[in-house]
Length: 293
Length: 343
Image 1 (cartoon, one colour):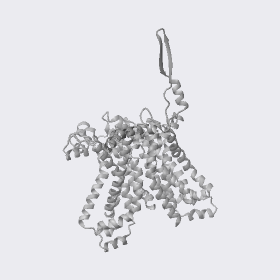
Image 2 (spheres, chains in turn brown, blue):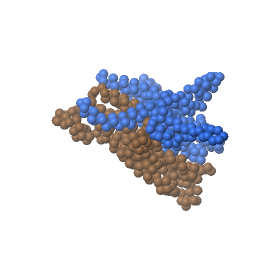
Image 3 (tube, one colour):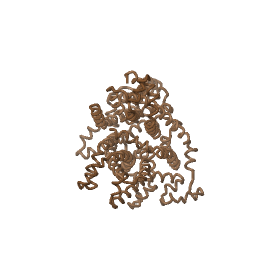
Image 4 (tube, chains in turn orange, purple):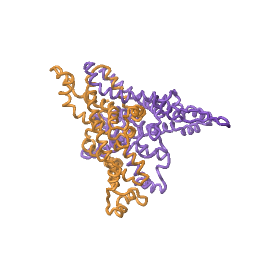
């Protein structure tokens, strides 16, 4: 493809470059702009008079004595207790990823090593479950959760997120395990291992690339979820995304929209780092399901 | 693998899915057939020298006990499905009789909340999906012709709109298109209308949500198509060139047919995912102009009075909608499986 591209006529080359620059601006500029604006006061970031105010921040300088201010961050993290939401998100993500990978690898491994027809039907069922919008299940959770006092706790939400995550995890790990040759654990079994020992000593050491990729997507699901977390968590246990949504309700009226801006930047930053370090795994994960099918 | 071993390996994941996906689906079907009990009313007769008066009061204790002992409520069959907030059977009959022509009929149906949500959800699904396919494909072609060193950087930035939570992505855009934000002001300047606000009109709100949808989903199709382009058969391209095919013809007759399985895959996945559109409506505070089925459920569940029966009914209807979109996926998976086992 490289040789091919060298032969492009100059006009096409120029229009491709323009298009790429255009796309990069669309994709990245909103985030850069919000990051920049989060250090201004509202009168500058949302300026009625002149959009240039957001760049040069005359009001911020006038009020705070400098072109940058951390007031939004202070307001969000300290005044509105955003740090609590950060801890909650960390806990939820950690346990969701851990649990769904543990039970997902067991299940996905079993699906890839069994040759009976029911594995196919189990995968189809998982596919059907994967298609269900999570919000449609919430009405079914609320009644029993209220009855048994399970509503509002982090642990309940973790379990629900793990379950909702399972269909996707199973499909992904199933396709990864199928790439690991069956002869590997067959020979371990010939040497006298049980199925579990074969899994433990032969498969676990070689399965990490697939597990890491799947883990990234489990993490994203837990980190980004709004439908489940906003419905199942009490005020104190809220994770970052529903917390931001509740900022919108309360602080916009008080003129504290900059709190929400700062919180949004704080939430996006870890994702930014994640894409930076795991770009290859994310791309391979996105294409794994597609290229196989 | 033996059945027994398989069972133990599969048990944890199966029980998680049974308890928290299968059972809730079953539960919402049941819940949608029940409605909360009415308050228990006591009629007491107070007699005084001037005659007897009947007084009705709500028996709070009895009501609470009844609601506690039967939390599901009372059985009403398909009543909730037919009420005004859902399929509105009677209203539709009336509208049908009263409307003079089809346009009026359509217009009146648009006033019923469930059908309005349905209309937006379907419009969103069937505009965003083709647009994101086309846009993602063009990005993939463009990035593929870039120099090796630039590719990684471009992919990094391209992933961002997809990786952030939809709520956060829509908030970021929402602040920019605010009438005091950078895009909002730019639009006011371009159209020379200082009062222009994307939030004020239904049409513009829909456009805004669809643009957001494409922005959010295009990276997915881009990445998948880009991976597909790496496996392009170069000799076919070469022979097409020798036969005098232009660049456009090469793309149309060689590249697109080669990517066809991937295009179908992305399209089917996206149809299902776009059908559940929800967070952008919250992020853009667009509920006055655009409501989706998922938002409809969310709205019933939130707030002071949790309308569980109504939410359950909307959920069942949404699941029916998803199942229709899911059908081609299932057929495709079935066919793939048979092809594989035939080999």
